[in-house]
Amino acid sequence: MTVDQIVTDPGLQSVLETSTRTRQQCIKLLEQAEASAVSASASLSEDVQLDLSKQQKLLFSYLATLRGSNRDAVLAVRQTKQRTAEARQEIDRLHLHLQNLYYEQRHLRGEISACEAYDHKYQQLPLIPVEEFIRQHPEHADDDDHALTIARISHEHVEREALEQERQGLLKKKQELFADNKKRKDDLASLDKDLEKFIDAAKPIQKIFEKEY
Image (tube, rainbow, N blue to C red; front, side):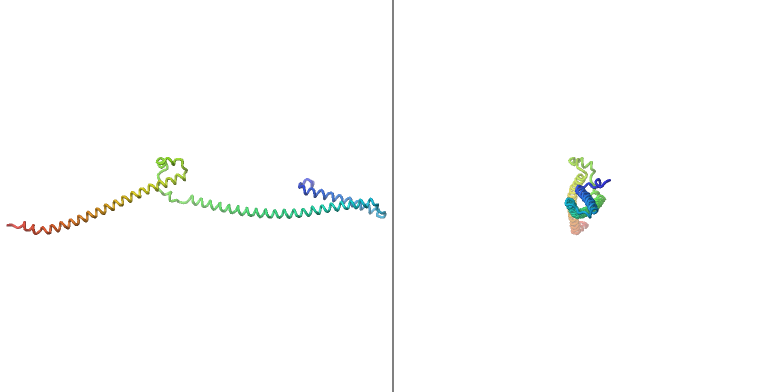
């Protein structure tokens, strides 16, 4: 696999092309320099000197382009490193946020499990069976389990309030009967005392009638 097949970035391909031209230009100048060295005893013609000057200027332009490309590459690397560092910080932040979400998820699952396992007081209430409740209240036939449970608890609350009112009424009636019975007992006790007094008062008369004449 050649370099051209490996490097696919347009910017790098341009740098490779400039580098190739620079290398070729250097080889060309070296060949001309070797040829000039062979004929060092003879003076170079103006055309040869002019051509060498042009070739040197062309080489210098290639080298300047390479230096500019190198400077741009260095700046690009710095920018890439900066973007990479910023991206890494963002990834670390998101990773930390994700870990917090996982922790919160585990916490919420634990809370949900605790709630599901909790022995709710309403489960101990003697609620009427669902079938009987729906038969008495058909408007709740399409309710879900949650709404149906709330309706059954509300029904139980109303029933218990009614029973409590009935109990209070019976208790009040009981207290009234107890007070009436106590009054009657007191009246009877007072009557007994009056009868005893009457009997005691009638004894002299009874003795008179018991005498024999």
